Amino acid sequence: MSQVFDIPAFDYREGQIPVLLELPHGGHLTPNEVKRYLHPKFTPGDRREDSDEFSDELYLDLPAAPHVLRFMIWRAHADPNRPCDDIDADGTVKTLTSQGVKIYQSDRGLPAQARQQVIDRYIQPHRRRLAELVASPAIEKVVFCHTMPGIGTRGAEDKGELRPLFMFGNDGDADGTPSNQCFAERALLLTLSEIVETSVGDLDVDFNFCDVIRYNHPYTGGNSLNRFDPQALRGKQPLTIEINRDLILHNPDNIAPTRAIVNRLVLALAQWRRD
Image (tube, rainbow, N blue to C red):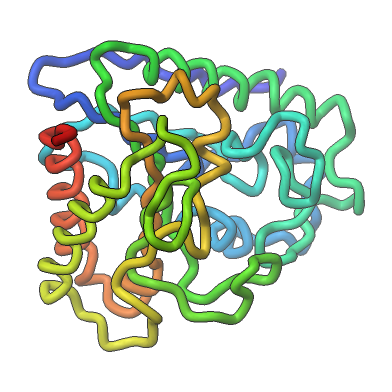
């Protein structure tokens, strides 16, 4: 009998700040529905590299005590950041990892029935819970939290290019102007950028990267933001954060100061008000 990993209930505890962090690619569980179909050469390392490595270390259990919703399944097997009808190789239920590694024995990936079970049992409940949290008056700001490879991957528009240390996305342009007035304002991205710029001296950055901060490149954040009717996000200043994994791969001692930067960003979001 298949094990179903239930989404835990989230209580609004006293002392939590009104910021929601979603970690859609931080899960570490393999659902039973996919195990019999896995390719024998698909390794734990392949699965890890396809995930948002270090997202738990950087975003969970912050002193600021934000609300957190973390998807529990490995991204290689279920991606709630994609539309449920996305059947591409890098879609909701993938056939290839972002590095181009074959996940399942068949070139077509999972059989249709198993694919639908993954969507119904894991992705849909997560997306419903996310929508409930976003709609709650207890949540005033929404952040979709990721980590990214330090160099553009196989299928990325910036394939082979160095990436920044931090990226903020509001589905807008390189200046931080959002595509929709319901998404995070440019002024907010500038405020967050100042925190990073003034804190980067706490990090060991003796490795190759292109910039400290970029907006909407290499990702715009559109996958996360466009899961919603923009009106559902109005007033909540939604944005994505991407942190370069090479910070940690280069020096694990960067975890603590990077967490401190993230904590400052979360506190700034809780306090930020439109002028």
